[in-house]
Amino acid sequence: MASNQKEVIRFNDLSPYLLLKNGNYLYKVPFRDGFAVLKVYYGDRSLLKYISKTLGNVLVSNQTSFMPLARWHTEYECLNLWREAGFRVFDTYDDVIVEGCVPRQGWRLFEYVDRPRFIHYFADPNVPVDERLDMWKRFLPVWHHRHRLALERREPRLIHENGDLKHVMIMEDGQFLFFDFEMSYRSRRKVKDLVAREILAYLKSLGKTVGEEHWDRFMRFTVEQYLDRDLLEHTYTFAFRNPNPLLRAARMLDRKIKPRAGKPFSKYNTARKLRLLMHS
Image 1 (cartoon, rainbow, N blue to C red):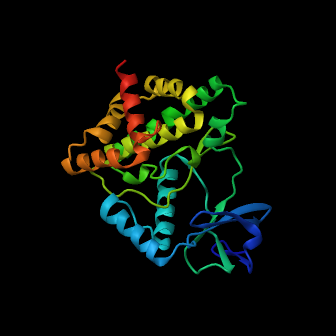
Image 2: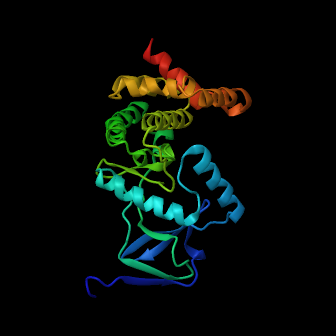
Image 3: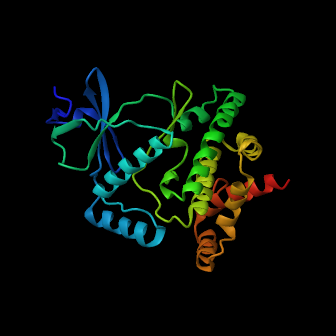
């Protein structure tokens, strides 16, 4: 096969290979001597849903579009950006064309990785708490390094828009693999706020995963080990003291009318707990 010629694989029926249906379709397909994951960005949502979500993203949340082709493009862009910055992400088989029952565009073929995700590891009662704390200790400098890069480069695409313990894998070589980059934030002026948002998202996910019994230890450990106290402090500003009066009022209303805001692991209670631990 010539070096510039792409490999072609064909599937006339993907239903036997369905791995996950979550708005997209993920298929674990036979490939070469193993498997690959074929991701089709066109899901089961209606056109109206795609349009309404896109309007909310673009006009309210300052995020990228929710349309299938836009998510296909954004994810590939972010994968390359994160990889070039030194972070482990899924590899893609750009030298392969998939034919058959897939759209002409809006699909991508990824490496298949069968490794534990954070959400399963940190929830596992068979793993001693001290071992889980040690894993979190190894993760914190990697996490902080990406936050610093995002701030230095004013690069919102280095923020994990859907960041939580469901979207990090523990690799055999000790690296952490990050995934799910279909949407990203767009504002270069608000990167510090976006870092604060991501910190809260991960920490509340951590709380839900390890439970109230252990959350305090993990939070204290984060305060001690995370390398930038100012960024941790900014989580409280982001949640409660935004200098923009409209955003501050919107978050106040959010706390009053949404039941989830009062839950133990809400972003607001996470910010309160973090601030309390930092000043205790």
